[in-house]
Image (tube, rainbow, N blue to C red; front, side):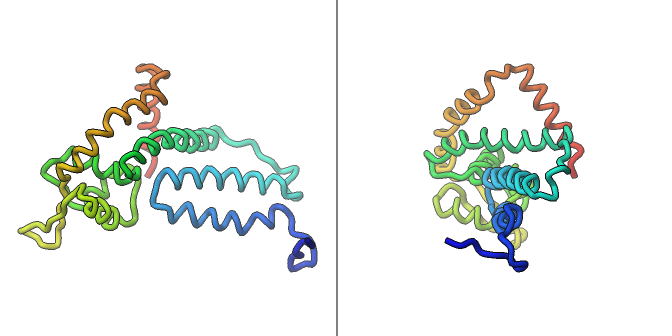
Length: 205
């Protein structure tokens, strides 16, 4: 099958042919609601961009060495993606996404309930449509929502007994997968890693 020529009458380079797919990947990064899916897309996009850039003839002799910060950033993305897969498999047994699980954990820690805006601010990853997320949980009977009597504009969310049962069933398998993934580091290195990650977040706006 003849190759399609570009606007200059030549066969497009690998770099040029990759542009549409990279654009699609970029859209995926910014529209997926799941942090884990977004992280995986970012990691894939970074590798695709690097490969396409290096293969382009004009860049053959312009390869730069990655900085230490860039190496660490990419390693964090890869590690987060790998670790999140184990959690996703556990949550799949209860038909929950990572963001839904996050909301349930937040509400379990506040038996009196939380305003929807407060839930959004406490989530590990920002969800652009928390209302729809809560709709799905309420439809499954895992949470209840009600309007405040003092201010009808404020909506309070609380976990139901059924939601607590779901979380209770997940507690042990979630702990088991975390131990399997990170237990080999030992308590001292785990705390050291926690401190380093906290220091990195402290400088992030």
